[in-house]
Image (tube, rainbow, N blue to C red; front, side, top):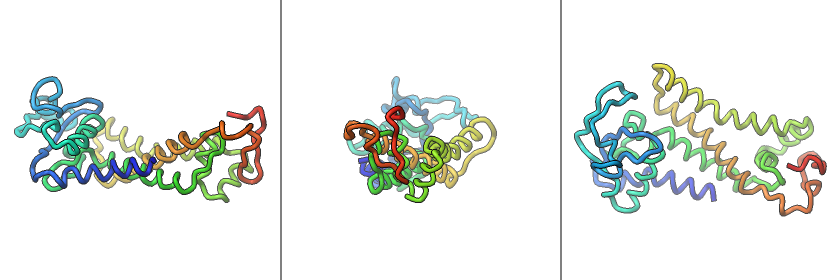
Length: 233
């Protein structure tokens, strides 16, 4: 399910600008978590209004207005998703067929990572009662045996999580707090591991089903390890 949904979302971000007439979507400069381009004027048209842009430290006076509500339904859904979830900054986004894409390059990397994580979950994830142990089930068997032999399951779980989050966090906060401006390749390469981690976490949340076991001691863990009755999580 994760792989299918993320693949659909990823492809939609490319198909939407490719199948619109050239020049339909101009350069956008919006905000995250808000509808800025739903209409050409009114409360949902922030992106179409003259304003000061803190990202570029300049005044923005859009010459071409854009409203995704005027697009065909499928395209409108793609651009509405991007409008709500992404800043839609032109300098951080790719343009295809003369149309700015619905989301920035980093978000594309996250969607690509979700596809990777979803594919791994589909092929390797095993229900092992807890979210932690179900998440670790996708690792190579030799790694799992070492982790459980040393009782490092929580260290491994949070360590892998940190590896997927830290690159994006460092790049993003450095950009926010300094004059550093990330490039498209770096945005993509930091988005992919973050998305992969999200995919693995979502998969573990969906697949961890303790109700399918009589008790925790029935769960088969790597290296012959077993849950103690007091350790059920």
